[in-house]
Length: 51
Image (cartoon, rainbow, N blue to C red; front, side, top):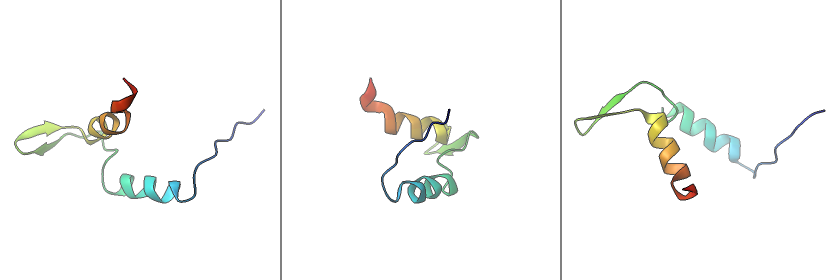
């Protein structure tokens, strides 16, 4: 059995750009004097409407 997921055209390019920009990093960075984890920010941003 195999599972495949259909994505819209251009999806992978956008995900690669996010990854290369550091949005999936698990290492904390300082932003305006506050430590944040980019992956946590990205998750909250994309899934905020799911709650």
